[in-house]
Length: 87
Length: 334
Image 1 (cartoon, each protein chain N blue to C red):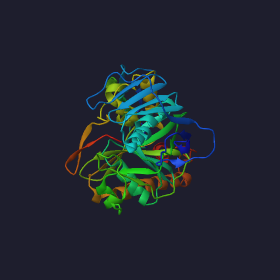
Image 2: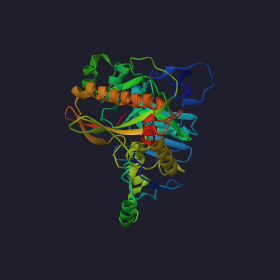
Image 3: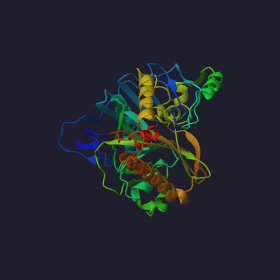
Image 4: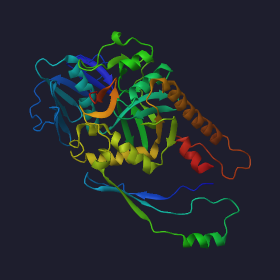
């Protein structure tokens, strides 16, 4: 049985200047039936590491990841000509 | 006045918009009229285009075309420049102006094409030239009716996401038109300066909103593959496909648009199965891509069937949860 990896992310109100970040917890995630023992538990407790904050950028930065502006080329070609966002 | 129906809205228009389906006699939700837009965008970009946007009003100016002012999600005022090509004016109404109007009405505007399946709506998101329309056309030819091309409007609330049908038109490059068995020269050009053609969808077009089951994010790679994204990966991958960023950051900075965009995108990532669809950008691969999508759907149907029939001795009874994505259910049930 697989236990979903716990995760938390900020979903409150924010504006375009605020960064989107996630907190990742490195926890045990796989337990096979019958293999789980107190010894394993003790070992896992020692292996605990602090949550790591991953900053992906502001809403604006993440949204602007791909160049979608009208009239601009996104780098693809059609019969050798740059394709522009016109529709 | 002409009456049309698109994106779940009754539209009354002074301009003929033959791309849209004819509407009934119901009171209009939206009025499109010719007139003076008043306040024009002050700053223009390198292409000569510009936009200003407030919380519930926006005005988009396109060089050589004119301006569209969109007000309160109910009205589009069109002011074409002298000599503007009618096709291009319609293009600016049916793309940018309608997207602004749908945004003002609270829809999530996804830069995607979408088709209907027996499970619900399937959306294919990607930039221009990534093959959204071509893949939608391929699936349309295989019996999956088109829902929307290029601009897909979603209502996202209470953990539920519905896709609204746009209009039965596809925008395709001549090469793709020919590959699909049509004659490109027989189809009208989308824009006088570009080779892209417009063609009607072949399957019957429905006006019923459908639950969105899948978003496939198109990607390029040497081999075909579908990778399921976890919700936090889906959120980051989906955000750039918000249609509103085609206007740069202006719309994102208007009112609480950034917060709304983030909130809706987070809900989407949580309640819809998001997958990365990698394929080579070759027309020859299209049939295989369509088969892969069908196989992906069939796998899901199989899982849903298994969930409905728990095997004897199964520790936990896996019941089908109404409205839930079977794929998500299956992760926790087995």
